[in-house]
Image 1 (cartoon, rainbow over the protein chains, first blue to last red):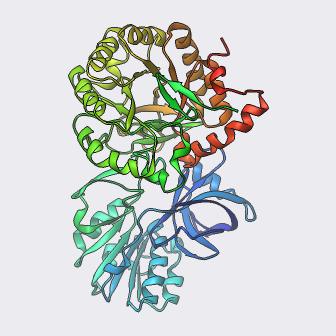
Image 2: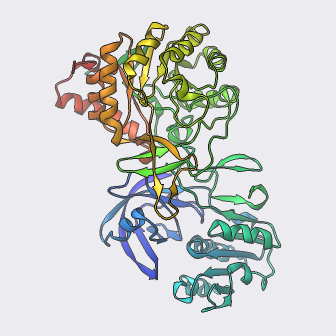
Image 3: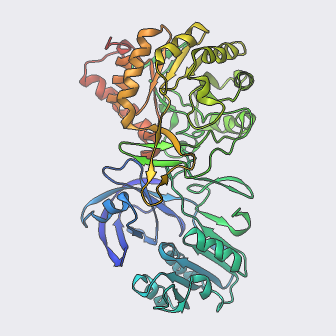
Length: 243
Length: 302
């Protein structure tokens, strides 16, 4: 973990209700896709956690939905301004577990961290595929970037406006896969657990206090004992999750 | 310039102490800075048996602060002693403070006796003020007779200084402090968190699964200062002051109110370097206000 001041390079809507945030600064603490950052916002006491979508040596990107006062305040921050950010939080995805043909299963906000994962898996010579679910065609984001990696992408929308009509779980049956990485709302993760035909791992969301393991605000029970979503997660292996 | 203070014979290089439940067992912070810059630190509260704590959500945002209802999650005193204290020894070379919670007078005594045997522990802080557990915790801290009974039971099993951690959720905190002093307490720590509630407008239900939680953060600083002041007038034993402290200036205010040392809690959660930064800022703040010896400041506002 590192604390740093980051410059806002971009903070703009990417789709209805979803904004893309790009920050420039020291990303040396970021070690794996699926990790998150925790952002200080004026007027709010607790920081706001956001998954990293992708990063390089000069900065990182993230996507967020405006769901409350904190994300509303974040959406008002203009490019050129600065943010106090804790980086390199959480365990991130386990790339070594991927096997030859991993499937990335994302829903809504959960699509974002899977992009950085897909890029790295492809760079490792794996053959990843992605199943991405959204509410409507208008809300689809990042799908073109996934496709640009040259990997198979199957979309699902609840209203049928793009791809398969249904949830992302309806989009995973086309694939044969060695392993899965799932990120999205908890109801989606439960449905993936029921449907998936291979081992895998899930990235969870939680209301957090500190975001780095000190306050025990986000602890959950697992097969292997109490785990802090922020520090021991947010990614948990399929076999350890107690639904 | 002298920043040292003394708590019942325990010499501290400076009065800054991370508070229980906001610093884990130190490891997350030791990865960020050298903890030997601290006066001491308080380990997460320990109970006789392991506890998972309350269901989540356990935390909620508040104006200038937060609610928590963690509910004393800890691996149990035996595991803290067997696993955490040896780890702490590798990165912290001063005495730590053991915070102890319980659900009966016997449990408090049993757990305190275990920490009494640990050379690494310099002081026992006895939590009779946790607002987030049922049938224990705060129940002992809201009644002078019960607070005195826990104090006597703990004093009987330890030679280490015993500081009773008091709840602000009482009619008269000075009365509880006096009861602890009369029962033999070496000092008092105050304040624990203030009982609070937040409601989610979308679900129309409390944000916390426990419904209520304890308020901490800068919002509570003036309440804490007032209570430290009241207790300072009521007892002769030392006070560890806490509640919303997040700067060197806040530390000076706490000392003037009557605290002999100061714990920093919620600030650690939003700025993991908070305690290091406060320690580093103390000399400049002392110079600005013409303070040569920090210990001379204690109770100076009275």
